[in-house]
Length: 101
Image (cartoon, rainbow, N blue to C red; front, side):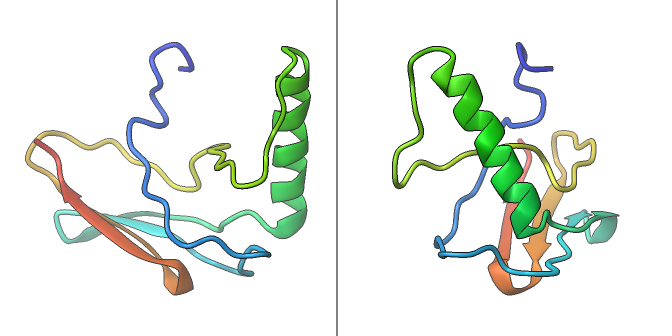
């Protein structure tokens, strides 16, 4: 999965904040139908993921810097195919839409 980048072929970033929003429930819609929903990680889980990323980077003499953006995992995912209209929404965080070509 890592070698082929299966989980992160695309990403959209919005505004940053000092602390993660609580209780965000993201969902993916494909062709107008909700395919998947989930619960975004809480602040403690995000800190754990950042700590783990920092440890991996430290092992190769790198480090996280202020302003770095880190993708640690998908909150929700679903198979899609060419021609699909996809929308990802996460309540107070906003949404992004795209058509797969």
